[in-house]
Image 1 (cartoon, helix red, strand yellow):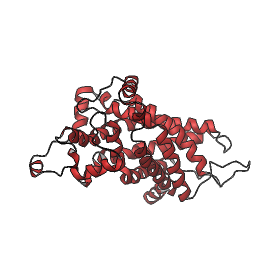
Image 2 (tube, one colour):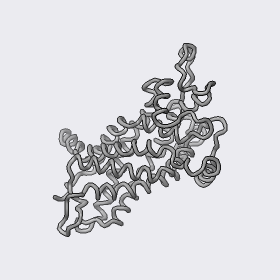
Image 3 (cartoon, helix red, strand yellow):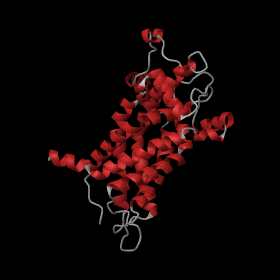
Image 4 (cartoon, one colour):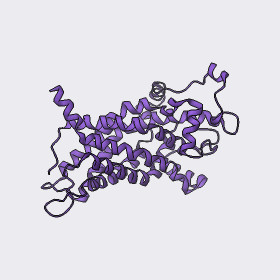
Length: 319
């Protein structure tokens, strides 16, 4: 069965809804990922579960969702652009209903490039909000500050925490629009390879069990929901782990506030050299498990919802 033709507005709606559902489900793990990747000197967290437990203990349940508002606001255009751009590029590169592997990789490259215009400022703001709790815990007295229950004095004089609006206004005032795009090169360096791995792998996993006339897997055919979900999870986890070193570099470069004794970086190469020299090669895999646990369900849900055709239903109701 050939792939159904979907209008661009429907693709944008599908991608946006998919992003909202996925991010809502996995955001706490993404917060743990950011905090683990930014640890350089004081090791406040021993791992993902330890990070989440300490975050809930010191900041409450909703502390795990710090930065979620920014992500939920911007993930709609980000995921919509990413998924829709990939579909458009795949259609343009298809020849007689067949898309060669080089076309799949090129389509993924185009999708990853297009999304950076939204991804960079979204990640920039999200990282500052997510990492604020780690900096507070590292600066607090005691061997394990984030395990200590909040005192009554802390309730009466809570520390002022950054807001997305405050960070945005400060960046625009001090650095202009370019401030929101700090780390754009590193974001591009992460997202383009991710998309070049993810989309071809997803398409071929999604086509398993369905053959075209030539006996090869038909990547243009429509898959059932469960297969799209599993293919999205599998391809997402593989691509996420593969580009984790690039994500570590991007996270370090985009983090504006540093803890005591933590390095600041002049660029991608400087960041790479300093991490290798001070922390060793294993530092480039910090948060790899978290990334797999975030990206796998995020893209599984995204692809599943995308193929449910929510956009077509919405446009049908409006039309």
